[in-house]
Every structure is written in structure tokens, then in C-alpha cells.
Amino acid sequence: MFAPERPGLTALATPATTVCRCEAIPRSDIDGFLQANPHADTVDAVKLSCRTGMGPCQGRYCETTVAGAVAAARGTTVAAAGRFAAQLPVKPVPLQTYAELLDGD
Image 1 (spheres, rainbow, N blue to C red):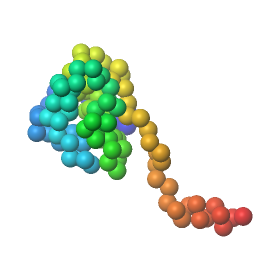
Image 2: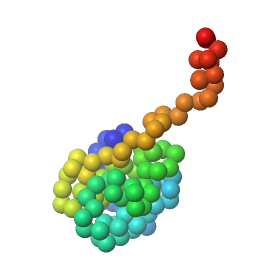
Image 3: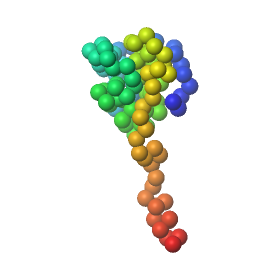
Image 4: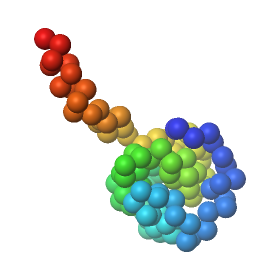
């Protein structure tokens, strides 16, 4: 995860708190999904259903909070909740960089 673990932040989030800023996902959506799906116990399960971590930041800001919500709902640790699966490209590469590689031939 990109942010340090902050267990208190998960406890402070109210149902109206926006957890994923990129996709405008409130905490109530995550809690509702976890309540309706007791078998879902990973951050990727939440990602696939609620779209957390699918915006431009790819979960850099919301991953810790989502993991905390999953851990709290399932009575487990943040580490057991996992991390978002990385999607390519991990970091966008400008097309100009590729063009410069071709110019070097």
C-alpha cells in the first residue's frame, strides 16, 4: 500500500464519507456490499463490485481505507484483506517516450 497504515482513519469514516475520490464511492456503498456478501473478504472483491481503486490513482488513496473496512467487517487484519491487484500500466508511460526509443535505432 502506498499510504502508511492508519487504523483510526477507518473508524472515523461515516457512511457519507467518500472513500474513493476518483470514483466518488462513499463508505456506505462498501459497507452495504460487505453486509450483503458475507463471503467477500478481500479488497479485490470490493473493487470488482464497488469500483473502488479503478480511477486514475488506481487505489493509491483508498486502498488502505477499503482494506480497513474489509478487516473490520470480517474481524481480520488489514494484511489478510489484501491489496488491489495491479493493472497495467502500473505507471502511465507517455507516447513520446516510446517515440524516442524508436528514434535511437
